[in-house]
Image (cartoon, rainbow, N blue to C red; front, side, top):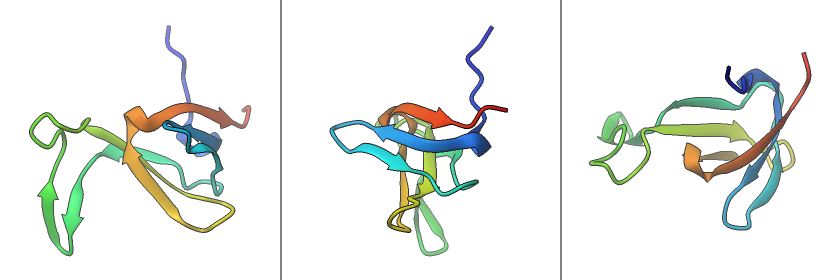
Length: 83
């Protein structure tokens, strides 16, 4: 058994280090490979030599319009819509 979380239903994210809860613009929460890019060039991919986690998150903050991204380990909890 697993604790299934549907990224499309995430409406809020609790970030680590005192960043608090952030409201997620509907449909913008996503999880994928964590990469650093500079223009068209990827300068750090996946685990970046074992320093960073290989998986990251990204979403648009509903209140500010900012895109928030980081390693998935920065996500403490999520709130979501029920199906």
